[in-house]
Length: 151
Image (cartoon, rainbow, N blue to C red; front, side, top):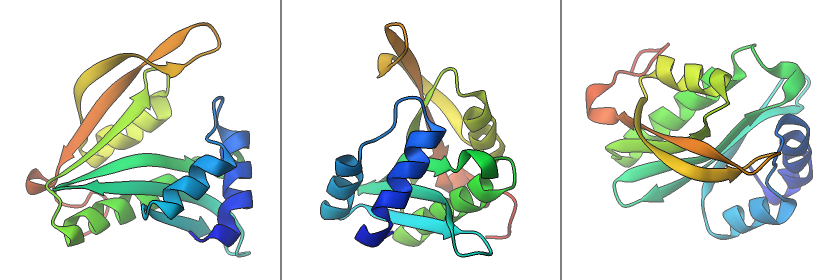
């Protein structure tokens, strides 16, 4: 992901999530040196992106998003595999993320990849009415072989 991608990335985020990150949020992530990637379709249009942050021996998956019209076609799984492979190359021992309690699709993807629930963060996310819990999930890379591909 480069600064040239950010308008499109922010647009995908806005169309795909109820409480999207702002353009400034993405700009700040790049400025801070977080790793970020985009995935394009056969027409070279961005359809998926992710942002991660390395913290000591952990990799924090901060955001992963697939354009609404492209969901269910394997882009999220492919991007998640890329994140897992990147974490392994960095020597990370754990990947952690938060996911909305109501986001069953994402939870299913993470569970299939080998992530496990670690705890619940009460009232973590804004919601239409009040706040929503986040499920903190983790993937122990020492116990995992890359799902859906060979390691």
